[in-house]
Image (cartoon, rainbow, N blue to C red; front, side, top):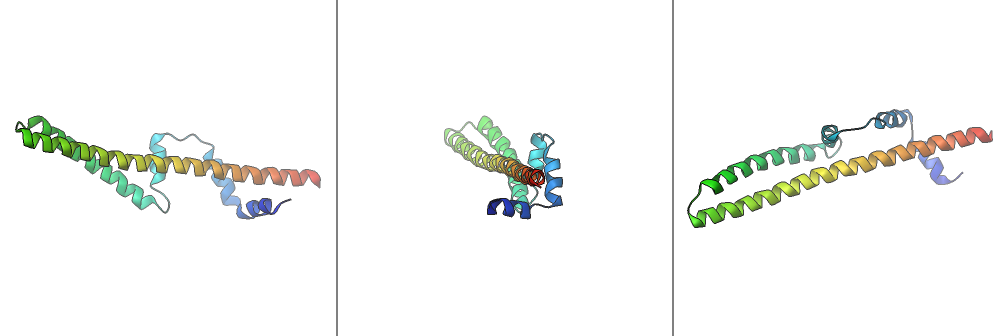
Length: 128
């Protein structure tokens, strides 16, 4: 047995096994979004989600301004504002989806940790 096996087994407890059981279910988009709101970065995820709603509403407002403005200078300024809002909205959504992907990867790593520990325990049981 190696020290890494000992460390993995030592780090796992009953909570980890329960966590593994909870990982067995498939998660949809809305559940993954909800999962980003938990944990140490949950506040930031909630803030980013709120900001995406604000920027979405702002984008609709700017689109209406672009459509209804007939002055060339104002039309150009509103079009530039629309591009700026789209870029900001894209960055926020990119961060949210990267967070969702990170949590999915952490979920798989945790599953592998538990499975390695369980396999090692089964191997030790066979040796006895």
